Image (cartoon, rainbow, N blue to C red; front, side):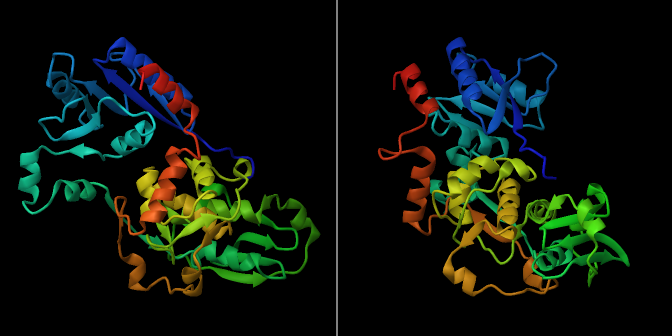
Length: 372
């Protein structure tokens, strides 16, 4: 677990009917982007794309998009155009702004950024404004989990005790925790440990054990890395209790990501959360990553003590019975909700840059290339 390095996601993109200049600019942008590996795949090359971008401004109209949609019915086929499309479709507006390109691509890859023609918007809800319809597209529902229950909770408690503790299931030890040396001895495989972490109803018993130097010598995994990994396995794309979408949080310090289990986009999330305090609604708005990746990262940093929360939330912390129905309820997360405009504006500046915080190299280079 200590030696695992963060993995970078690969997203294969097919560029359909792009001009040579447009394709060259996209290829350069993809090469300079380091949090997700965007790879251009050619049509007919035998590689299945994860997303298709179709330029419909070249005289062929919408026909190429319709053909690609039939050929790739299970992935986003995006209309790339100066004008709003006449059909309901994923839409990327031209000319593209490179400071928002990658957030837009992430949203498109996750099934977002769907454009509805005016008539269809009215049919969906005659009283709904265009802004309301756009907001509706960025809502998602999440569940929560209790980090103080199950195997994760047992490890957390055992790590705070003054004596060595064995965690058992059905009378057999799963792991032995040595707080004095901050190590854990695993007695089951990683696969078995992951399966147990995913079982919210797993019955666990913690038992004090006598000092055993031989056991300590065999304990190679740190408590920190074990908590981090088990938090990810336990979260499974759920929000750690008692956080809510309105809870404000930030990072106390950078986690040593080279010695912790990988979470997609962890480097970017760490860099962002050490600079600003946000809630989940604002974080999802300014950094529209995969929600499960965000929630797994929040769980890992919360359980390991890297995540700091607002004082009101800290005062309300308490142990929750895992059977309470509130844990099963879905919570609505609205990425377009700006309940705190100052917070949202500060987060936008941290991501996109400002006069005080210059924009990144990629954005400056693209402005020179496009003459804007």
